[in-house]
Image (tube, rainbow, N blue to C red; front, side, top):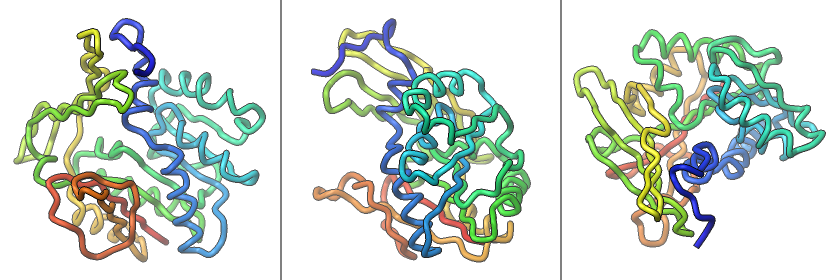
Length: 268
């Protein structure tokens, strides 16, 4: 049994990072993908909708030349991330700069890699808004820059349902709540809850008001924004064939899964 969390004592950001994020693995994917495409190491990184800056913290730990800009409009996770994710890095933390700003604002330095993780950019609900965001990203990157965003889909992604995932150590259960979905507009109200062994629950720890976007349409919008190539990196499955294995491979053919996660990698 792991640490004994309860609804009263748990920190929602700790729970989120443990249940949702795989920042070390994600940073490796971003770094390696750039190298595979460009044949050189990426240096400057920009994280949109960065939250607690966990991904940026892992990015600057990859190489002594790595720097990062982290953008989010919410001051609370930025403060939490500065204290808990950046300051523990010591002098390395100086290579991360936080900006409490709209993710559509331009970078201070043109990034080699820019990303939007955890479907956060789905806050843009119209095609025009998404196109303008992607155009801004395209213009913001350096000449060899790439943009990487993740997405999810499959029949289960458009159903009103709850999905529970218990942590391996039994310390808490992560609940993804697809509370309400409008199939006409694609708008969705989604929540994250955390449930604990003592029976308590941290309800609506995080709430999202998004539009659900499809992979083909996002790819087309990225192309319209000017990107020369937009490739899909599809997640493989584990030995039982029922869960994702965290390994993403470039492909033009995916499986018709009930639920999937993928990356789009857009190159100038």
